[in-house]
Length: 419
Image (cartoon, rainbow, N blue to C red):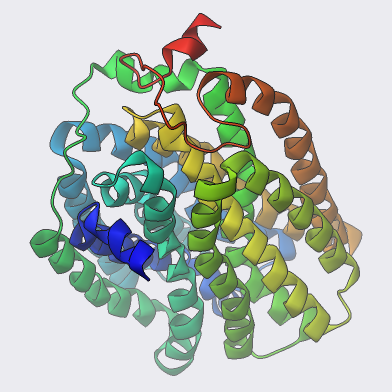
């Protein structure tokens, strides 16, 4: 407890709290169509492939919007960017309430829900910006635990859709966005680590090998989280014939594990290193996903396996973003947005893989197998690149260096450039 108080005193905790709340509500909006998937599918009699595509559209749209929002945040400030984004989300939800009545309009609404998915890089950078390097992992873990918004969506959207209709949920969700907006407006302060760089310097991380290595790993950890979280209500409803509300409750059990353990993943990574944590995470994700594919006849076993898988994915998200500010100390927001964008794009892979597997093979098994192979591939890549990482900008295992390496204008270690 004394250590946690020391952590809070080392930064500005109201900004961290506002960032968590902002990300939490945005995440809930982002996965809204996934949470209401069984209702929407029943309304328009969708095929398995259409279900997967419908769930993936907000994920892909949110991924594509992350990097532009990260760039905007560098010019108008992260707090202002968050306020602008939340205003746009309210407008998007109003469109959903008044205008969405066909499957094509659901897909259009999915694109608009992607606005909420763009919040990732801004929320984490804003929340952690006041904290010193040794606490970055924990601060980012707390802000990133806002992906618990998935829990809000799958817990509240199905019963509300059951009672009032799924279109009405968009209107109710618009009202809830007023809470994080006011907290951000009144409590948050722009961190002192504002980056004053040219556009070319901002996007330099796009052309570095490390940026793409991080992004590919994040395809598994975050892409797996958002992809599974969005598709699980449909999976439970179709596979086990539970009610729509029960499908949301079962999804909530799994996603709650991932959201809570994200903080623990950042905390552990501060101590044993993000590389060590990620290695264990990728092994556990591969094992549990493969077992989920073969446990499709048991609801209890499948649910427990998903809970373990989500715990691993959440820890992996916290671990990876313990490493980001070490690698890009002066460009954390932009690097985080770029990594988050590619990782979220990977989230669109899983629902489509699951839907196509079900439609053409008659089972979800091959969707699980495909993502298991991807996780093992990323583990092999991590074991190779970590050799260079620990020689240039991180201690063994991925811990922060006690004496920071000098950095260039893009926030990259000068030793890394020299290599």
